Length: 356
Image 1 (cartoon, rainbow, N blue to C red):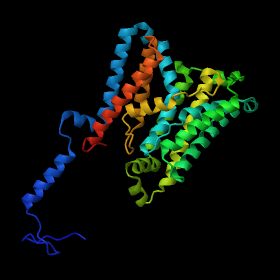
Image 2 (image 1 turned 90 degrees about the horizontal axis):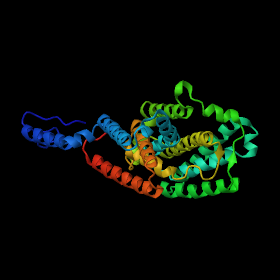
Image 3 (image 1 turned 90 degrees about the vertical axis):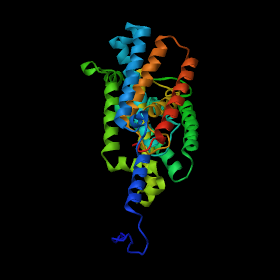
Image 4 (image 1 turned 180 degrees about the vertical axis):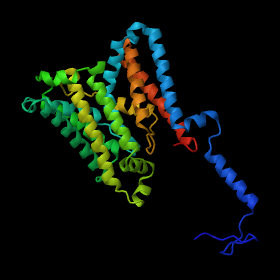
């Protein structure tokens, strides 16, 4: 019940209300702490400005690529190569965005992609035709995600440990099923369909675009998305508000597993084989893309648009490294430095008052 303040400054409960000037001073002080003070902080507090900053970084990287590699970088075929390579890890990154916003993390995505690709390309699976390959990859990926979610939510195991165990198990199972052999896809119709380029755009890129649009709608226009932000921001408060946190956590990991299954179909179509080495270091690349895109590792904030830009930035950098014949070890060092820089920037953003 609200307190009533009399003309003498006494409340209905008998306490003395603060003078009006004092109230205004406190309100001004509170407003000043919720408003970013510096120009950089005001930019960081604005999601649209952050995305524009990522676009500016991408354009700067493209300029560097043109200066260093000339027509080799700017050619249409090279641009399509960048987008084609970005599409597979991009689908995984969209799913990873959901899990990280929800306060979790998944280190097993690369191993799940490998297991899905191997299981979907066994001789027995290929006997069911192209639809059998696609169905198996999606089911295996989703099942692995479900196991991760159940262990994390109901087993109360830290996501880092639970998914690390899945990483080892899934990669080992993939090696056992394939006997460390490369399994070739024999259905030419499957390969021809996914390698098509309607209107000059590869099907794999269209699949990535469709996944990103659906992910954006799910995150920003549905109750599921709002609950994901709520759980990542404060799981206990979300539970007290009536959200079934454990069931939602299982759904988030299952969604990421489904994205890994889709990525497995895409990588099978691109390479025409299934092998236990597929998806190597996908966990590093997808987490890096999500972090570069502005999603907080502590959860509660992030965007699909930022993740898509992060994926394209990372793929463009990889392409420039390759064109410059940079050693893979040097590439790994450069990636590590970029991730550290992105995390340091995140910490600055997290301290900015009023950040959304």
